[in-house]
Length: 169
Image 1 (cartoon, rainbow, N blue to C red):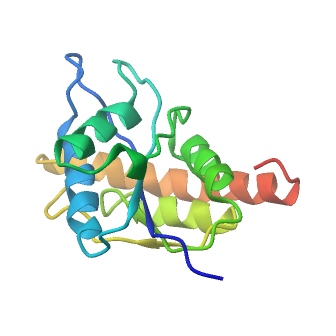
Image 2: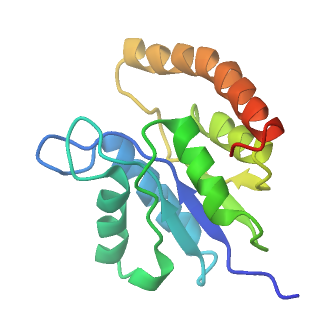
C-alpha cells in the first residue's frame, strides 16, 4: 500500500472585519506553506468556520494558499469548526482511514492541544515548525493566550477522549 501525500492541517484564527486574515491567521498559513515546500505533493487542510466576521477562516486561508500558487485540488477546506475541539473532530472525520503523514500548523502555544486532540481522535498527527516569534506583541496578551491554553488543554482532551470512547467523533 502506498502512502498518501502528507496533509498539513492549519488551525484557524480570527478574520478581520474587512475579511482579511488576522496576524495570527496569516502567520499560521505562512508557516504551513513554508513547511509544505519540503513536501511538494502536500495537501493543505485549513480549518475554521465563520467567526465574528466573515468569510470563514478556512476560506481566507485557502485564498492565501491559492494566491501562492497552491493548486486548488491540493486544498480541502474544513469550514464547520467553531473552536479547536470542533475543528479537530471535523478533521478526524475527514482523515479517518487515510494512510499518510499529518502535520499541524498553528502558533507554538496552540500546537500541543491541536496535536493531542488529533491523536486522541486516532489521527497520528505531528507538529510542523510554528511561526517564528511570539503570537502577540504585548506581554499581557501572550500570557492571556498561554493561560487560556492551560485551561483548554485538559478540558478539550477530556472531552475528546469521552467522544472517542462513546464513538461520537
